[in-house]
Length: 306
Image (cartoon, rainbow, N blue to C red):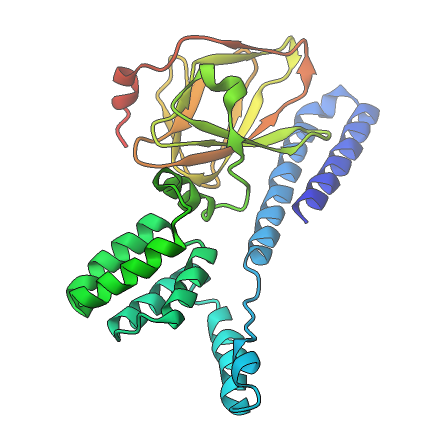
């Protein structure tokens, strides 16, 4: 769906460019505004539709499989009402419902195979190893130490393959519909900290999703061009910074847009206490190139606060 919307946007941009050439250069500023509006409008549509699609309907058949013949009504209520309706209500995400369900089961001292199932379901719904560990530690003071010990034993098996360092990235991925992507090794020498890159489109207006871990930022750099060029950033998750040389840093939050003219020295990256992701649109131009400069020092970065 997102790919189709991007393709539709690309076709629309082509049409606008053709109309602009026919009308003449006097209308260029107007069409530039229109093209930007189309870009943001299509992006918002993609975000809205993809968000609606991102939560797949939860289904359950265990009731009918295990108790269909013995207790058909109970099986129906379990599969169709509890999982078919309650788990799919919009008031809470599957992630949050899993956390609540696990807490309730541990609180009642149910630390058998049913808890194992719900722990596996919680992991499937995006609950991280850190989150389950913190929750069970908290519950121990209310549900009893033995119950927590039993739950930890099961949880340790369910999350055995997850590395602790991946938790922050996993949790951040849940905040946005675009993928975090792969480690940005090709440009790692121009970044302080770890960044990730996911190419979203290579057609018409190429753009990528760039993700920064907390405190990660790129070096000062310039997008050169003799005509056109530059870059546009759209924050999609987290909190970050953008700064042009000689200007104060500007905080970026989800939905914020930054237009970077060609030939302007600047940098961008995550806040100290937050992951950060933005879409980076490469604006077409003539004789385009990127020039990288010195890193943003810790001293300068720390003055920005959180």
